[in-house]
Length: 233
Image 1 (cartoon, rainbow, N blue to C red):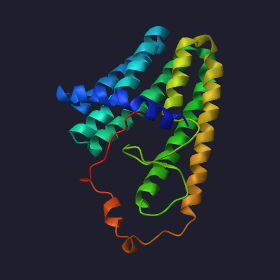
Image 2 (cartoon, rainbow, N blue to C red; image 1 turned 45 degrees about the vertical axis):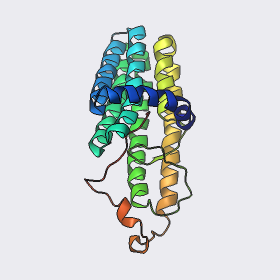
Image 3 (cartoon, rainbow, N blue to C red; image 1 turned 90 degrees about the vertical axis):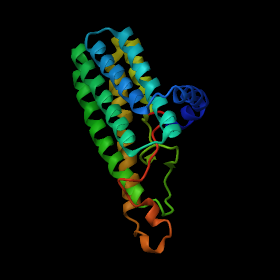
């Protein structure tokens, strides 16, 4: 829900930093890998109850994730970069929840429910993204983010910005982790429902024949087609 305004707010600053990194020859995959290392370290710190360190590492992970996309666009984004970026994000998101369950036994049931909602929402997200990619030449009545990310996103209640805020609040106020996790799990569940409803609406419609559309070849999946990386996640 907050991703679009957050991107508009942060994009100018991220682009300026990305220009410096691009001139220095920093490859975007190095930023993705370093960001993943910070994210993994944040999970370990959370598991050990070192919440201040976990917060710092988590924010560093998010910062680098916000920079690899702009750098990739300047140097020539690839589908491999977008794929690895997405896998890294999902791994850190889930890893933090596992770490929290280890550090706060009272939050374990809430963490299990959150992981379940992540699973459903992620499945709906990836399935819907694939459908929207195949139907990119059609006029669809759903809000699809055209923001340079590797996959086609449909807005929902819980997106990347909400995840940053939720995990940050947990690190700042670990005594209230149970309430935060239950609340965020509910938001992710609602997001999953939104994506399923959108997918049902799209799939109920007769598909326009690609042969009748002059742009059909342009949206056909290809291992050699370039894609763009996410400026933030």
